[in-house]
Length: 453
Image 1 (cartoon, rainbow, N blue to C red):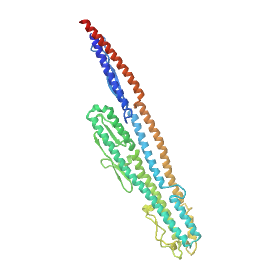
Image 2: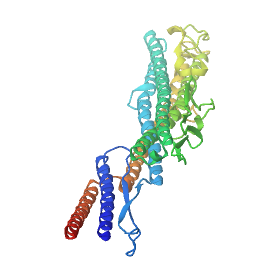
Image 3: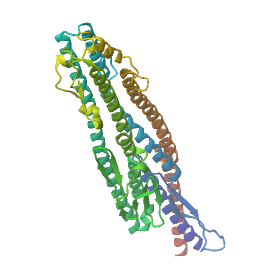
Image 4: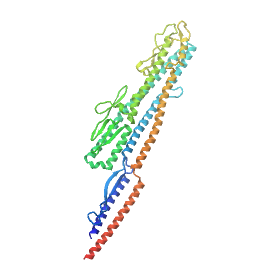
């Protein structure tokens, strides 16, 4: 009789273990599409068995639950997110910059430079023609306005980048605050550190954070996770958040840690890294090159005109172009010079066109380290196009690498509905078999009891 009861106890324990495994499989199926969820595996532990002892009657009980999440694979996905976020953001922004420097024939600064020299060429044919002189002034004014507009567009792009840096920092702070909240729940009850729901919420937040900035996540013994931006700057430690802040001025944008330390140079990847590179490195370089072009072009034109004499035979007293050397492209403008004051003739040759011809020659002069004004502008636009193409190519590569990393993670810890359904059927059959054993044992017990009456 004792053996029958012992068998019933063992069978009941097996049914409880199988029910636990069934619950785990069911939970996996329900969370198959939950962001950040990692498949859970139930374990079964064989009880000690001694045929001569009822206290070690064998059977099986539920063991600990295991998460299939792999820390190395998760880190690989995050790193791919960092790099993909950088390339995607920068290629988008460089597309915006490229529109500021159109490459179409006759468009942008180089188109206006060509039209200015065309007006100079017509003027050199009729140096004393008032209409030709007026045309030179009109083309000079349009060219200056084109420089102004290009500089303004670059400034607008810089301003938008600065605003996006501030909003991205806010997004980072929002996510780290969410991670702190999850940490607090895991620390309040250490057993919850193994909660698949909290675990999926945590890793969903970490993966979202990976798009914005690179970080290192370190699990702690109390169940919390510490997050360090760029591996150095604390953002989350336990249940305490260390928020970032951002400033944007005329020259650059900066990111500071919670203690006011400038950490801009540490942030190299992710959306935030791309925006900082654009705002602090690329746009200032393009602006400086545009200023160099505006100042060099205007300065050479002024020098040539000032070397001649005007329509009245006098040495010029007014430049054609005026500008502020600190921001030549944005400030470039023509002065109040009149048509007769333009110096077409060389000194000692009143009424001639020598000076106008010298201006015509400026179009093919290598005044920018051997490059003409048009060639210098073309080199600038080529540099922008090359960087855009490089980021597009790199972005496509990083997306592939990200997909590969996510695919590997899915194979290791994702939920395969077909596999889980197969497990479910196997466990249900095991549960049914245990039920049949229990039914047989119950029948034997009834028979023995009836025999004893």
